[in-house]
Length: 550
Image (cartoon, rainbow, N blue to C red; front, side, top):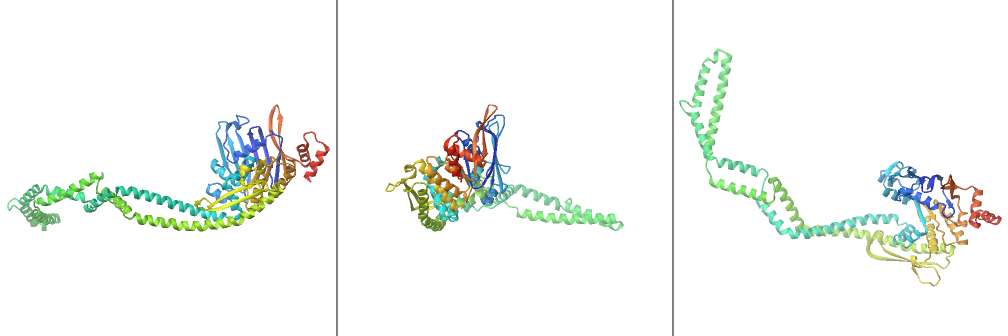
């Protein structure tokens, strides 16, 4: 419910603060007094785009602030999803700066126009005569029928299923595209895969081969140096082994004289043992060193294969070649097993399709059941609004297509005259008839769903007399379930309001500004009398106004 509206520096408004209550509120005023300005300012907090031309004083910023009581709208999840603070009394504020920039806030948290639009749709419905064209929109017609059929939860389930269904179909198309593309490259990928598979590469293999070839290619130098090392160590007269043995014997002779000599003797003993061990290993290594041309050729061939594969796949090492191998393996697998994967995906689509069809059928049956109820209520309401001969047809047919709200197609046809031909609303109904039809629709909807605040902007255009009185009765009845604000030029409707506001222009210091005030009982009598008979208030007009109010 709209609780308060505050406007500063907007168009002809300097400063305006107004409080609204529940029930039916009436706003009246002469043509040009500023009713459209009031709605324009409200439109800003509902997400309308801002323009610097709206500023009354171009040196000051414009601020429009609206407070809504959202206690009964179940909007906690919306606020949570948008990371906004939920408040029972929620304040939406728009600011337009002299620079032309605008800002939007929800409970003092900066937000975007997109979020503002999403929220405002749940809070307030501004309805003008031009918006009656929505009646010709199939989506809106479904919204009406589904409200009566209580299809909301089923359609929500259906939409979740449809999202999964569409995702599966998208994935299937992608799989088929990949399959087609990969098939074109399959033979080449298979050749490359088999080549790497046959190569049987292992991590570190390249470095190991390069080391082995380094040894084999230098076998003569190695053999020569090992032999000479043995000769140096084993020469009977000047060999290292003989000299160490003599060295050791000299120290052994004096080892018993001192701990120092004994320690030196022990260290030389260790040196002798280590030398003998080294000489043995050199002898073993020397025996094992041999020139093997076939092994060199084999290793060179293997290394060349690795180099060729590295170059072919632009790889830096065997690790990267193995990654290429894994990628080729996946591509080959996808093609060779794509039929199964695609079959599985088609089965997934079929499973979801079965569930969607069940939900769509259930939605269809509930729609079928309430269509006669809707037609009866509509024709009854319209009869009360002076359209006694109006008739509706709602043709609901099943389709093979999954639409966003089921598998139905809906066509609403209307005839205003008994025995007349049925046709589309926008083609066969006049502006006044469309206004009454929309009012009847909103009235019915208010019985079934928790509608937001609704503002009727001169929806009564084209009607008068007893019909306007009936329209006022319907608005009044609607206001028992929701907040209704009606901008009207008809006294019969104005008299039905629980509160009555007047928009008027005021001149102060040669400056015109728009004002809005809540009328007292006596002011209200005068206002309605003016609406009946003009500025010159007559006794009959005043009497008639009192009768309407009573």
